[in-house]
Amino acid sequence: MERRTATIISQKEKIEEQKALLEYEHEKSDELLKDIFPNKIVKVLKNKGKIEPEYYEEASVLFADFVSFSKITPFLTANQLVDTLNVYFKKFDSVITENKMILIKTIGDSYFAVGGVPKKNRKNPIYTVLSGLQMQNEVSKVNSTTNLNWQIRVGITTGELAAGVLDTKRPMFDVWGSSVNVASRLQEAGLPGKVNISETTYRLVYPFFDCEERGEIATKNMGNIPMYFVSRIKPELSADEKGLVPNSLFWKYARNIKNAKPDYISLFKDMKEKIRNELPSGIYYHNEKHALNIMNATEFLGFGEEIYTEEILLLKTAALLHDIGFLERYENNEILGAEFAKTILPKYNFDSEQIELIASLILATEPSREPKTLLEEIMKDADLDYLGRNDFKEISHKLMREYIENGVIKTPLEFHKAQVKFLKTHKFYTDTAKSSRIKKKKENIEIALALYNSQT
Image 1 (tube, one colour):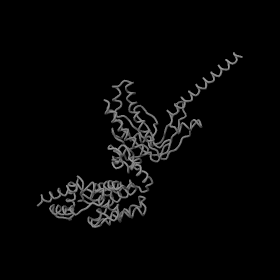
Image 2 (cartoon, helix red, strand yellow):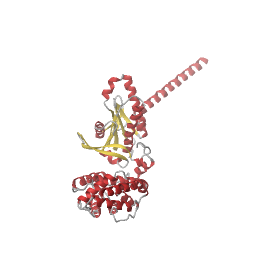
Image 3 (cartoon, rainbow, N blue to C red):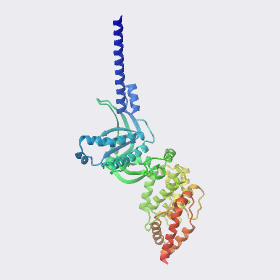
Image 4 (tube, rainbow, N blue to C red):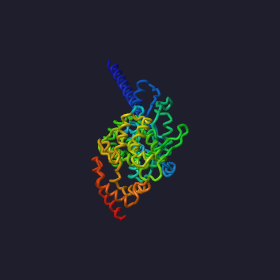
């Protein structure tokens, strides 16, 4: 009896050991799956044993690559090379995780991640651009605390993707599609320390970031792709000085304009080209640069007045078109700009209510008209924003040349006399303009007086 009991106990202990071993191996398997696949994919694999490829209509792809890597490697041992890459890649891992992205793979010194996959997320272009900016910042931070000076180029695009698990001896989650190749080409066409994005991404993120147009890149199957450098989050939407961290207003703005229907980007590009190509000679101030200045001013003042809706984009549209009448005649052309807006804007998917608002904002820039709404006040202040800026003297000189050439005034003395009078009677309407421009405007009045006195 005792021998039998001992045998049973021994068998029970062996069963418990085997059970513990199986549980340990199961946990190791789970951990391995989690290391290889995103959580959503792990759940599907555990439940079904396989996963079908999935189509994603809008996902964002990020490629980062170290610059002149082949020139760095000869000076490092194998261990030093791997350890150094790990320092940077771990920083990148933290950045993309924070921004709801996943790592697809590292390929040598390249880092390949996607947003909006496998969990679909409409804000994935925004998160991916944030990741690019923050990755560049992490590289700078690592370099500042070490003797390293490694730099990366970052390329980003947004488009269609297919994603799934390759059924091979070494299964892996991967993505496929032309967007992958485009992101890689954008990275190659970028510059060290820069985030280079395609126009498809730019169209989805431009309201939130300061960007710089930089020409096109040729691709085999996608034609020429316009590119943009992303500098930072717009200052009014940033929680930090560098423009790397969004504030609460950033996300409020993103929620409010997510369903904007007009094709603002095509309109902006077409109208800037029209102004550039069709503006008569002798126009030194009311040109493309002036339109861009007023667009920036409406955005600055609009944010300052706590407007975080599509009205910002409508203000910028009015700013772009408010002087389009100069293409036909020099004076009293605001009505021409309003009529032009009514004619052209339906082609860019603006609705009738938006068009009427834009036309009224253009008319609000007439010198004798008093603004009746906050948006008209913003437009009025934006049109003369330079009166309270540091570039007042430069712009004043351009305006004087233009006035003389177009017969508005005859001499510099006449211009400076009129300018001093105008500055003394002019007033800003919005609280934002009053708080940010009046002090400088007073200094500019003294500059205008000095210019006038120099002519007498």
